[in-house]
Amino acid sequence: MNNSPQTPLPVQTALAAARETFGADHPLLAAWAPGRINIIGEHTDYNDGFVLPIAIDKVAALVGAPHADSFDVRLYSAHFHQSANFSAQQPPTHSAPQNLPLWARYISGVVAAFHEKNLPIHGFSAAIAGDVPLGSGMSSSAALVVAAAVWLNTAFSLQLSATQIAELAHNGEVIGSGVRVGLLDHLASALGRAGSAVLIDCRSLEYRYIPFQMSAVTLLSCESGVERSLATSAYNQRRSECESAVAAFSAALQSEQPQRAITALRDVTEYDLLRIGGLIPEIPRRRARHVITENARVFSAVDAMENNNSPILGNLILRSHASLRDDFEVSCPELDVIVELATHGGAYGARLTGAGFGGSALIFAPDSAVAAIINVLGGEYTQRCGKQSRVHTVAPAGGPNSAWL
Ligand code: GLA
Image 1 (cartoon, helix red, strand yellow):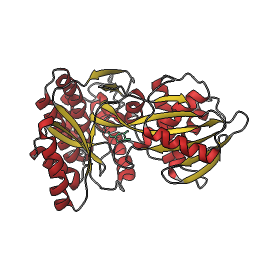
Image 2 (image 1 turned 135 degrees about the horizontal axis):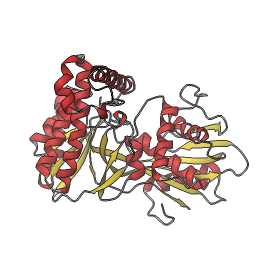
Image 3 (image 1 turned 30 degrees about the vertical axis):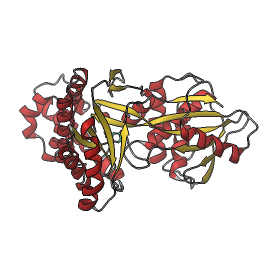
Image 4 (image 1 turned 180 degrees about the horizontal axis):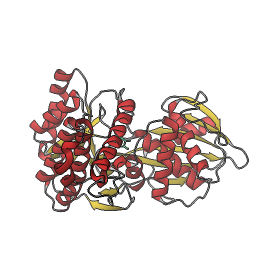
């Protein structure tokens, strides 16, 4: 993070709102963090697996001032035109929301996460704005909690690393929202680098940047227009099913290989699946098959990116979608139609991205096919699904930043 960055538009919006709401007579600190699109590695993060996301050039921003001698937190959302106040000593949580709206509980959750780690913070006033589309599968919530963690880190001179910021932001989101999301979104946002995807091991949190330099290709994200109303309960259910799969594989392998520790689906191999998959009940077996094959696809995708092989990367993306649809069962008819139309329009590949059940699809296409794909997603998608899609061009963008204004 440096002190003279280019500030994105939401920073200007939050700055104007902060001046109007809290007064203009003191220096204001801005922090912002990007949303993300995951190229591949879906529903692998909470199975200690591998992910390959990019940060995108849409951000959430906080602009405000720390309070030297009080624990009062005063927030204003430029998006919802709402204020919310609480004490940093007793931050509201999902289970004790103190009437705070969800957008503000993302921030109070982050404050609670800093508390849990005994990180010394005071109260503050801050206005919030952003241009990551809400509920679209591009991680507007992770952008917000990472921006909040970056803001607190700079305001209270805490010297936290990018990975620590991601972990605090992640805890904050879980505390504030009650959804047991994994670390993918927060790491993708906190580690974002312009021009690169990042390969992350969600067990060790080691990561490696993979330059995205494939020739004559475009990444699109296509919002399906489907509200992810089922997302919370179904997401938590998938996590439990993966835990059941771990227990079942662990029990099945225990007698023949007692020394092997199976603590996550990461520890189960394709060979195990072939050999003893038949002993595992069908649902956990299919959930496990998705996770195990998806982890392998992440590494194949890295190879394809490093070898500038677009057809192979596209094929892996399509296979990821099929596995999410058939084995993990997190797609919906609209996302399947987007994948079908994009492929017919000439894309190398397309797949749902994020949790699924609605939200967005990622489309990976040759530049020459982009106009045709956008066209078909405008017309035929609406005819078949009765919904409007919204297509955005996305490119790997930089991570969070902060600046005194
Ligand atoms: C959501 C969660 C992530 C991850 C994805 C699926 O985006 O927030 O942690 O589990 O779903 O890959």
